Image (tube, rainbow, N blue to C red; front, side, top):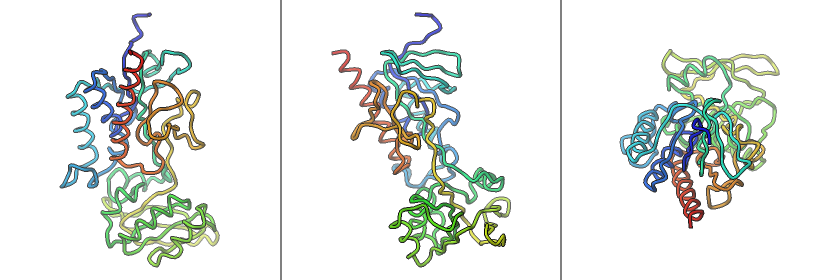
Length: 316
């Protein structure tokens, strides 16, 4: 074997709650894991200003602070946390091969995929501005809806997830305005009827977002346009929620791993196992239902335990 090829027992691809938790468990099992943080070290939570629903933080914590603490805990037990990202993989043979930054080759006995998923946004400059400021733009009603209790918010989307999030917000907020680009929902009839029959949800069909308005720090309104009449008006709101879907960060695995039509990796029920022996998945790369930090951490634990058992079975 070439001296330029590194051979390791356990590689964790991606950080965030899933990756770091996998690192904690794999380290404690003497698997000497190497973790590559990826293009967004810490994952989606690094863009979350306040986290109040993760156990163990009674006063809440910022997303970046929580990720730094999880990283420190993983490193404390021996996880080798590295900068860089995996740009190519080859799971066709008995040795799992990956390439880091298109140059360094690593051979792995086990791999834990924790690459997460990225929320889709509209791409408006004003939307991205207030998203980065943490001042009122979110792609997760369950995560952030609590901060908008008794306030008026706007949500964009037309599918089942958008309807579910709008209904969730309606139980917290005084009013929810739902923007649907076409003249019908894409959601199932039962989900559409749920929001239609909720008193404090107003649905605006044929309506698109023109701009997210604010005072430079916080969102104050949303400028919208009716795409049939071209009438433009502002909707007063302190929160702007985007529910147009997520894209799992799994493209580099598509030639080897079973995925659904969206790109979420399919794991065997009740485990983190993929269709390739020795390759496991955790977090939002496989989870399109819950997408919470605490569930991601739980599956990170599962993946490390599954990887440990796989190695033990091979050695026996």
